Image (cartoon, rainbow, N blue to C red; front, side, top):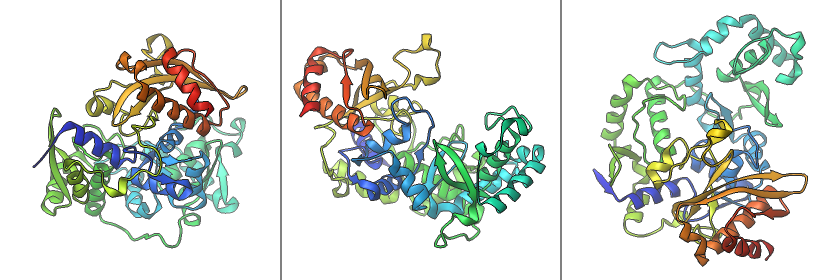
Length: 419
């Protein structure tokens, strides 16, 4: 059993996700590397200042532009999007996910899903959509007028055609060909999957082991408590301990304990050299930044970033963070679209903002530091200024309104932005 100080665990989690000690990927090729390094890029349609997945990549890729993730996903076919928990996944892993898709399709008793019932309720429409895709090549929900379709009451669609297309997508018959204003345009999977992708049928044990290792890799350090299959990976809870024991016996994973954290954590055996380097006080060579470090320039984390979302910020950073976008305005503690501020390897504050496209202005609606004394820290002020400079360039903004920020910080930020 390996024992880790909390600081080492935090740095490993950040570094594994490509957020520390600085951006180490660049351009379109770097976007692909970042998405592979992250394991899953969670997608979200909401666009207040930018979409969460684009903010995630801005924090990892030098000079990232929002179109780049779509380039490597839909144009280059390096990834595909899928799931009730919507995320990109490497195209090379299609055979594993097809098993999960078929579990949902077949209504396997070990897997909780409404997908099987969807086919029962909309069988004829699913056949109709399948035929239309065969004839037309690509189809989107907007191709079907609401007044010409049977109305449905579902989170997944308000038309029978929408639910049928969603069913075909969830079960792997169709894939996202591309997106228009984030809306999926569908095509048959056989027309999208590159010929180089392995399509062999995999057994359940192989797939379940893969899914557990993928979860560990995604988290860096994972509890594997599986209280809820929030990522919809389709591994029955009853198999948890058997799979863990197999992976430990075959030295695929290692056990760790972290000071101040409850329970046992797991990491991939292949990541042990990274952990050893951090314990020895070294930064792994493959983590060397291409640009500024997070000490020299802060990074803003996306609302759905793996290192801080879903309550993880409390464990990793002692930082309470809840994305309040779905809370009624009167119950929000901070704001609608608040982003955490990463300085070094710590979350030191947060801000709420909006992007006024008419005036091309990033407007700070609220700004909060965990320690108010940071407002007088010159090094932090410079790092924050550089962070906002990069962020407004990423957004395509030309102006910055920081009147809600401490005056001592605002003066330095404006200087950095204008240099």
